[in-house]
Structure formats: C-alpha cells, structure tokens
Amino acid sequence: MKKVLSGIQPSGQLTLGNYIGAMQNFVKLQHDHHCFFMVVDLHAITVPQEPAALREQSEAVAALFIAAGIDPSKASVFLQSHVPAHAELGWLMTTLVYMGELERMTQFKDKSAGKESVGAGLLTYPALMAADILLYNADLVPVGDDQKQHLEITRDLAHRFNQRYGEQFTVPEPYIPQVGARIMSLDDASKKMSKSNPNPGSYIALLDEPDVIRKKISRAVTDSGREIKFDSANKPEVSNLMSIYSHCANLSIAEIEAKYDGQGYGPFKKDLAEAVVATLEPLQQRYKDIRSSGELKVILRQGAEQAAEIANRTVREVKEKMGFVMP
Ligand code: AQP
Image (cartoon, rainbow, N blue to C red):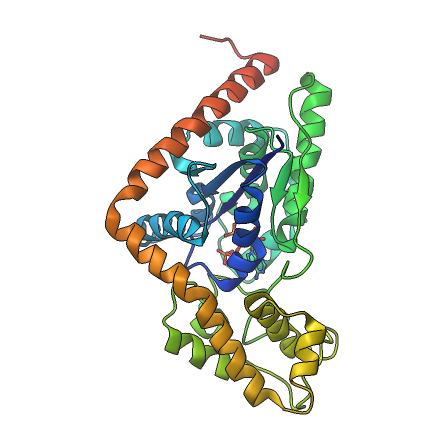
C-alpha cells in the first residue's frame, strides 16, 4: 500500500481553498493508501501567532479533518508538534539544503515581501516540510499547485541524502488535483485564496455562517461583462467562481456555461452561494459534534503514537548513517 502524507497549517481559519485543493483529496485517498494527515503547527509559527489563537486553530483544523470525512481508524491524524522527530529531522535537513534553493521559493518571496524583519523559519520552512514527508517515506503528497515548488526541494533533499549517506529515503511524488488545484481570492483573482489574508471577504471560511457565505459571494469581484464563460486569462474572477461552483454543485464547466447562458452574474452568484452553503452545512454540523464530544484528544493521541513509531525509527536510521554516536 502506498504511503500518503500531507498537512495543513493552523495559521487561520481553514478556507474553501484548503478544502477543495487539499482535504477533499485526503478523504478520497484514505480508502486505499496508508495515510498520515497532520496539523502542521510548527510551520504555522514561521509567522508570528498569538498563543491562544494557535491553540484554538490547531484543535479546529484537527476537528475539521474529521468533520470533512477523514476516518481516524483509516488514517493517522495528529499534531506535528506531538511528534518531536519532525523538529529533529527538520534540523538535519536544514544542514543539507542550500541557501540559494530556499531563497528562490515563491512563497518565501511573497510572505517576506515588504517586511522589515523576516523570521529565519520562514526561509528554512521547506527543510522542515521535507522532514515531515521523508520521516514516513511517503510515496505521494497531495498538495495544491502552490506547494509544488516545496515538494521539488523535498525530492532534491531525498536524492542528496541517499547519494551522500546511502539509500534511505523514498523520493515522493506530488499528487495535485486537476480541477481546483488553486482556488483564487474573492477580491483579487491574481492571488490564491488564503486563510491568512487580513481581509475576511477574500475567502470563504469552512465555518462561515450561511449568511456570511451569501454576503461574501454576492460581493465577490467579477468583471464588467455579463457572460458566464470559463476563460482564466480574460475572465479570471468569473472562471474562479465557476471552479468553485463546479466543485460544490458537481457540475462540469460546460454544464454551468449552458445553464447560465444569457443570464448574467446575478442568478449565477445566487446559485453558487446556495451550493457552497449546502456543501458546508453537514461539515459544520459534524464539526460542532466533534468539538463538543471530547473525542478529539483521544484521536490525536492515537495518531501521534502511530506516527511516532515510524518517525522515530527513521530518525535513528538517519542519525546512524550521518555518523552520530548512538545511545
Ligand atoms: N487557494 C487554494 N487553492 C487550492 N489549494 C489550496 N491550498 C491552500 N490554499 C489553496 C492547499 O491547502 C493545503 C494546506 O495549505 P497550508 O495551510 O499548509 O498552507 P498554504 O498553502 O500556505 O495555505 P493558505 O491557506 O494560503 O495558508 P496561509 O495563508 O497560512 O499561508 C496545501 O496542500 C495547499 O496546497
């Protein structure tokens, strides 16, 4: 059985982008793969986080994994910080990666742009991400298109380690969904929908109330035309809304174009809002049940134990190969 690993940062409220681009795939993959799904809290602190918010968001992301349909009896669900091997292998990978490789990462450039001081963790983040994946010898890493560059570094580091110290790591492959790999911001279709965007109108949070969702979609930027046509180059805003609709209503792009032929943006946006509300309502209900039941702590403890067993073994093997004195 192939191994799959992926994670989501508790750096804000999860968005429809995280759901369509990542979580829906997690749910599908768990049936015929050995899966590890993490809340990557160590990654979230690469930008400052308020401690109480970090704690709350971390539990919220874990509960949303379960609410979205990840079954803890099929997949290991855990918090990255509960398995110290991540930090340990992360350091070892930091010593293997080159500055030039880190400095050319688009995400680093975006997140550090215009900032007076930038934490070193924001730069070295891909080394920790490589450790996350390599600890479990994951074959497949389901990510949105935006994470492809980081996965390339992971692949390079796996090769580099294997060449320098002897065969250890599986070289992982990205698993990127064909549609919905990148859901864009509602206020600017040149940027991806992002949970850390300071404007909540730019994203739909998975826990947004139905009326908030309706309002955000009605205010979503479109263009001055009135045609519902998929054309990412000339109509990026409308195309993005169509991708979201296609996912939530389970309609093809051609079906959407035919359905709204000659109708303008009003009726389309109204139906889109209802489709998003209907997609998120059952998830929100399950989320409330999980948070109030207390079962999350047990799930996370079990997940961390399963993960640590494999991760600790990898770190031991790596350290031995690198020349550390073993206790
Ligand atoms: N807009 C998106 N469309 C499709 N996929 C997306 N992902 C994120 N945004 C979109 C996918 O979600 C997974 C988790 O991402 P992450 O939390 O580790 O970090 P991120 O990619 O940086 O996501 P955000 O929401 O933009 O977080 P912040 O604002 O904190 O940086 C990944 O698989 C990602 O591809």
